[in-house]
Image 1 (cartoon, rainbow, N blue to C red):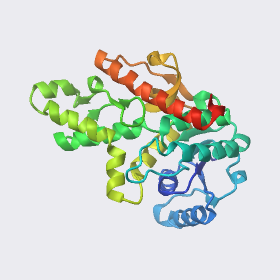
Image 2 (cartoon, rainbow, N blue to C red):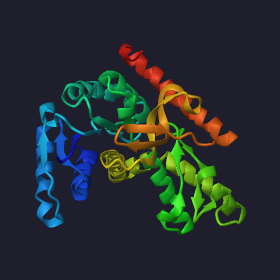
Image 3 (cartoon, rainbow, N blue to C red):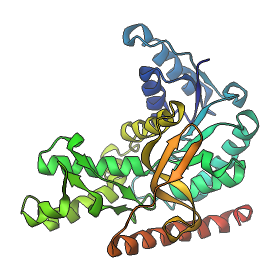
Image 4 (cartoon, one colour):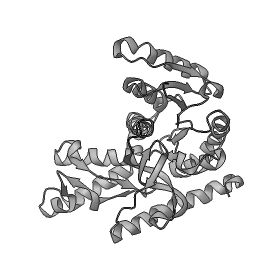
Length: 319
């Protein structure tokens, strides 16, 4: 029996997700959008590439939640993307309304699905989605840390002229300006980044600039595109999470997951390393943080908390 992945939102990320899932042969695909024509058009376009690309997945476009019934995985990108000058927080009011409708749509049709949320502002939207839908907390996660880590690793690889595969690193915390690059856990060819600073291979100032560029990675792309936001890297990150679940790969991935005391945080979603397998989030990995990383992580948690308070003012049902 082939698996089924439903993509809620057929914008740039939704369309790219559908294409990547088809190329990997991961599952049959339902591309859902309230604008039915966009979903149908993109699904047909991707399906017509199958003889060339050699995949054999069913792919349909729809504006009916009924077609998403019994999905194994649901990836949500529905929402308004950031426009130039817009903060992630400005998006909150608009996207909370959209996520509430999505939660209603998927609750009845795919109650056993593993749900990945990509809609910004990420940490609070994924929390709202879990509350609205009533899905188990280990089956609802946010995609952010993989993307942030990927950006950080790419920038480092460009600066050091080292292949990305030789760099290991994590970015944790909230998805936004308060995210925390885990420098103590960052290695290049097995050597800690702090060692490379000592050896003069990279200046401390340059490293700080790369951390800042990572924090503003999304905004930098928004500025260039003018009429849109990042979609290739976010889609690739979402597919990695879906694949780990469907194939029970038990990969350790940084995701926005529900914390119940881990990292001194309770009752909040935030970016931490987790194991994703056939049961969803199977474990939160507790990393040893330096004192500075602890301080920065808690600062990041506070900014997520502040945004959650703002969300509760917009919608009392989140209290």
